[in-house]
Length: 90
Image (tube, rainbow, N blue to C red; front, side, top):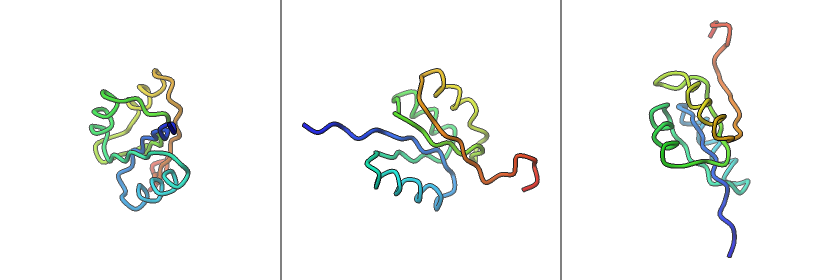
């Protein structure tokens, strides 16, 4: 019996960016789960443990730092990306 695909949580509120990341991960043999808010991410993490995650720094309902802390506590590797200027200039 083949093993299940690793699950990668994608937290991204820009639809086109989320679609691109999802397609790349699915093509790479992963099962991508796309969510667009911190609240959705918290609900997902209450019920599941992804194998990895891709986090947008700033989602429509806030920053994802609490979700990142949950992933760290569970030993789930993740990357963080953003289109925001960390200096507050755009």
